Picture 1 (cartoon, helix red, strand yellow):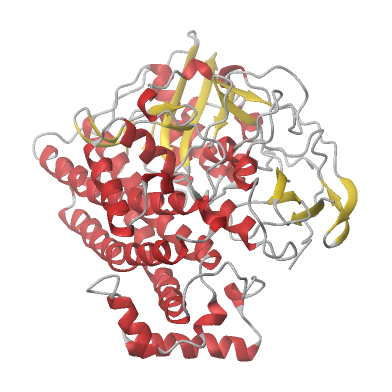
Picture 2 (cartoon, one colour):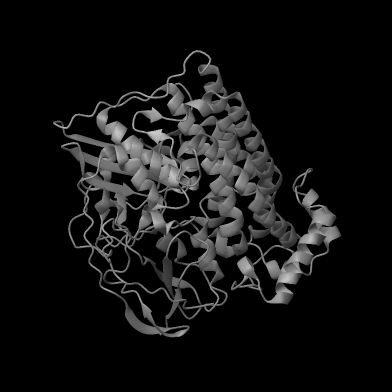
Length: 567
């Protein structure tokens, strides 16, 4: 007899997400539903506004990857107006994007995802001296992993436990049988978790040097950038380079060794080695290195056919709302997208925690739409980016992927797993950090002969415009789509990474990556579904991007209650 497991809310993410699964008598997941429980109204707010405000408004979609939405909103309007921004502006935008990645990916691995791999309670029984020796196995220059450092961390965590105030370490599934790290390895990871809290501040400052502030930078405009004095200041340029070196040092001496350590320990754990579910991937060109040169190429892989990788056709993107809380209608291209809410609620039924409200899997059950590429669900994100570029023979990516597989002893098939998705985010971080220095050098060389940063976009009110942007946000391909009429936004849609990944089943019965990746996993204990959390966190969910509550007139859009169904 099947049992329903409800995880609500999924914590350590941006926004509100619940996941429900059904397990059979052997505790194997046979069905899954991903439900985001708050509505995004940004597209509605954009109607009738000046296109020049698109970036500033849409960056409020999220409080984490604000720069990505800012840039996407600006570049969608620039595409509509056929604006070619100055070379310096392109390089500066790329440098800011790289800074965001170095911040976002470090924060994700340590502060959002690490506790799915790391048993903090186990670290209390570790031998700090043995842990310091263990750290040397993964790098010859470990950071924050000397015996004294580790002993201090252990004492710090022990005091938290004794006080009963566990803070970020509370309410987890400590002791779960799928944890694979030794006590000493857990202690190393906990030390790096705490060190990363310091490093992420420096990474945020990197973006703020040219962005003005972080989050919600303010130096991009339609036509270029406004950070002219920062670009021309040797002191500001040197500041960025110094902060980059500090963050990159942590990436090389902590992030990389920790992923190698986790890969070695978890390569026998079935719950992280199950296939990705949706075997199609989508990524776009991004990260300018120089004139006409980019770190990553764009493309589409359908049904795992790496040899058949093809270029993106924007016309093949549509959004389905069959199982989303919007008015029914055919799948629509983003240019013609509609955002008309139709909330149908939940259904009470028995779960492993007793009777609870649950989603209606046969009806509508989430505020997230279902994007499809030529009718197919696809995964976006670091894994998709690396697979597309590996398939296209991108030399940097091929060398990085092959190097990681050789270092871990894992076959290439291991990429198509939860473990592979987590490792791909590390590799992308390293590639972006290295490439950022090339972009920085290109900027320094160019400003010696060219200081231009802005071109007048020249919009006319008597002309109708249509445009879009596609960029690689930290969580995957992000696209903004705009129609402009009479000098105002007539229609606006944002198709975000988490929408691609977390969207519900479509009209053809095809599930999205979140749902499909969970089916077939065996839970050790359905009342403590760590395996579900680990898989979902590997995508780095940002439900604030996928759905958002806001109304500029102050109208009450509805009342919502999010209750925890489990510890």
